[in-house]
Image (cartoon, rainbow, N blue to C red; front, side):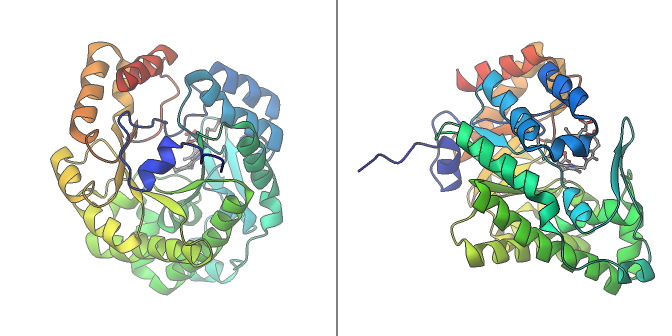
Length: 344
Ligand code: CP3
């Protein structure tokens, strides 16, 4: 019998603590890497890079080659779902995403219910190229945005500091807003299943803007749609491993974990460490929680911060990561310093 490959990352998600925690970084393929900037420059636009299977696979693999992370995350974006739903989605240099706003019930009436997944075929192809190129011990992460976070961009048409337009729409026109959420739930299930079929080992659901919602709205617009996505994925793939990232959920993390059925939860740097250890890590694996700004800082501040994270979480099921994405100005030497500190 062939030995089953050791995958420290997947083992943590199955409930087995690793003596040295697996490590990766949110946004690990990106502008802080000169080799990424080089490929990005020759790809043209950001979406052109996402939809070029060879180049998307290449930038996915770059941080693995350079740092030997335990997981690769496919290079794509959460806004490819609105794109596949036929919405106009553009990324302007220095400005972030631009979509056609979906900010009243009449416009929601025109929203397609079924995405054209043919438009996302290059993402699936990139996943299979990456899976073929990775060692068996390295996990490949597929992902989508949580419906609430994707809806904040669809409603406003761009990023907003407080997600006010989506929050207002959810209060004023709950039925129209629920339709957007329902369309995103159904299509995210299909999208995640297709990523598993193409070679993803693990899935992550990014709910970057979960933290702006009052508790009742958090339960309705963040937790419940995420729960339905996970239920839908597991109806077809019962043992699918899924990480949730309800950024800023704080005191509501235990109820998020309980209700959604995630295998792990990714946690930002503001959550109270002892609370997370006792109320969250006791139930599922924890991922995080280093502040990306201390990674820019480096030096003894970085060493101390890494030691704190390890002292708090490394006795349990833990994946070392940042509390949010790495910033473009982060020195590569600081990433190397962080890895030496974590791995000893
Ligand atoms: O983590 C990875 O390395 C995989 C790729 C990935 C990207 N976006 C590439 C990207 C992932 C997982 C995402 C998720 C994503 N996209 C989220 C959720 C996670 C988070 O960081 O909060 C959100 C909210 C988006 C939407 C989005 N995409 C915004 C707001 C922006 C502009 C801001 C920015 O960081 O530039 C993007 C663009 C984007 N997505 C870039 C990358 C590498 C930068 C584009 C470029 O290279 O010019």
